[in-house]
Image (cartoon, rainbow, N blue to C red; front, top):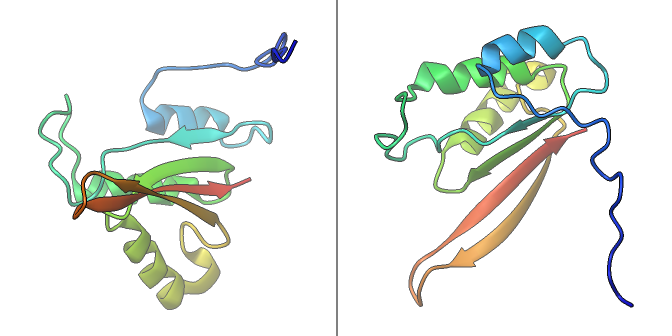
Length: 123
């Protein structure tokens, strides 16, 4: 009693591991595709990643988001949201995350330090 049944919950789900540019190119026209993105945070140390991410990598991801369904993870330590807000003010609907929903969760590290994890969705 009280146990959750989840048989078949992930039926039809395809998990892939490939370069994001190739995946977007392959699945862009697929109305059932949902892209889940969790890139390194903009303006944080990326040295621990195998391939160092530059500003152009973030801009490339933002360009590819247009016209797709996605879940994008970031935090308020990143400045990607501010960048997108600026782009929305400057370019309106052409901005990468225009019309997306932002959900935040505050995480407390100690009595002085906290940050917000963010999940940005466009479904």
